[in-house]
Image (tube, rainbow, N blue to C red; front, top):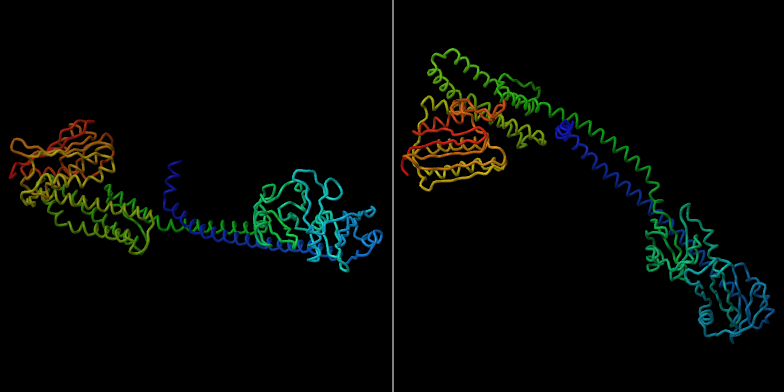
Length: 604
């Protein structure tokens, strides 16, 4: 089950689905997020606007109340009146929120009136700010007398009374009329103002203490400047807004306005969630649209993946079967694009190979009694027909490389993998043909050695470089032990390099991961000896001679066909013998192998 899931996850269809889903989901999510954010921000701005209007309205109401109170006080006259006359004059002021009223004459004489009480005469200092400010400015608003934090407090005539004084200059005289107000009047004004179903209002004095608040417990607290929105409101301009947290640590949106000239701040707050409530409908609509787009994208990706992946998969399977020897395999692709052309070239290649192999087999059957002649004819035939074999292979390689280089359009990762498989199979067949042609030329006597003096050490080092990449992939360690007496030899340098590469590539191929491959040189008995040693599975005794024959390979403990054509060692044997040397193998099953070849000592 897990293997099936992994196989599907790495398939072309899955990748197309993921790609299309991303192409649709990312823009849709971005647009939806922008829409939601814009809607939320708009609702939030609208909420703040309404809160600011409400705060300014309440601040104006409070300011208007105190201005009217001061104006009413200034309209009274106390100069020249007796205590009884003053009591009659000021009696209308003694309302529910008035604690007392008193008149201060120019000479400091004070007459105090309380609800239900007799006038009390005393003296006041006319140098106090109350008298001086009221006479110079016409009115005076005193500070709110709040008890210390955490002390019992109630509004009205219960518990401690919170009060403040409002004074105004006498309109027709030189005295001052003063009214001491129960601050509960502000609480009553705030109660009549509504801030929505979830919002609330409160009023703070310049120091941040609560003057009016819907929660009576707040009056026992100290300054509320520990709240971020209050701190900002008390230190910034007369109007503004901010986000913060209330006493319950809930996120709120707050707006404020200032009561002039008292310096009080009126705050209107509401939970921040109120701004998100209208966005819920937009959120659900966005989710439904996104799901619909994703479904359409996935359906389109499945159709496109099937359209592109099926012919490539068929070509891959056919190429693998042809490479395994099923030369009668054909590909049926009804397309007029590059994939169709590639399929046609694969069919031509398979037909050419099928005809070639069939002809060879027929000739072998008919002329077994003339083995030597038949072998020579076979070699001549292969040499003459090399262009017939290489032409379709080169076309396959060319078309595959054109597709892989994206000259006619983009290909995805899976298509790239299939093209690599096609190129690998084509190169494998081309290598097979080249080995057959080389071997045929050797057997037919058509190979002439280009003898010369060259550095054997340099040829061995180049051979190591050629197999180093594959060795590193399998974590195989390469070792080179050269005899300093062995360097220059006489022979065909290109053919000797071919032998060295065949032996080294076989050693790396059959050595398990983490093993060792070594190459060494020595000189003895008038010849140069080159040995290639590996830590592979070893070769059985009955296979040590057979592996040097054409199309023969050693068995490696299983029935699986080993990698390769089975011509490398046969060709190497012929090339070494053309130089007058020998080649053999020393091996035991499970103990690795050592391939050795010798060259006669020429000019060293």
